[in-house]
Amino acid sequence: MAKVFPFEIHTPYRLFYSGSVEAVVITLTDGEIGVYAGHSFFTAPAVTGVLKIREKGGLWRSAFTTEGILEVTSHRTVLMADAAEWPQEIDYERALAAKQKAEEILRTAMFKFETENAKATLKRAECRMKVYGLK
Image 1: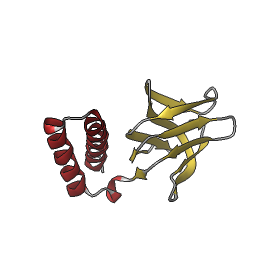
Image 2: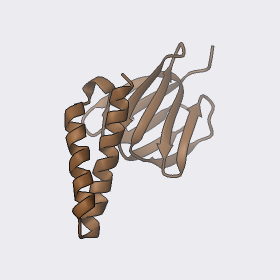
Image 3: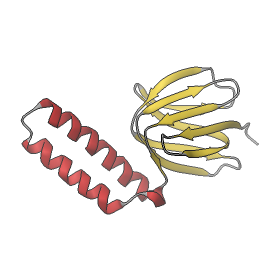
Image 4: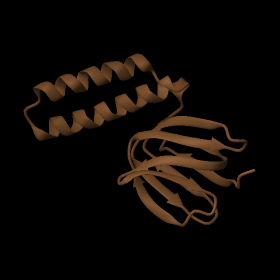
């Protein structure tokens, strides 16, 4: 059996997840990383994407998470994210509408702030739709 370590996900609104896990796979600003028991300590910015959690017993779960900070220490690993959602919590139709609106803005935008916001909205919508498909 693989070693486990405590993992938590906090958002401004709730404790999204708390449990003992075998692994966590998350996307940081410089790429995807896997965290296992005994991993070296670090703190790094996380980006919007699909978070994968391998719980005790080898079961993998996926969740949508937005920007945040991942902290790995000797006694626990914590992700503090702006938002996190399980596949069953995602409103697919709303994500699809957000994706379509962001794509339209990207086609017609004239200012950088419009395109930057639309790119972020598009990324969130696409990640939500991907996680929704994993349920």
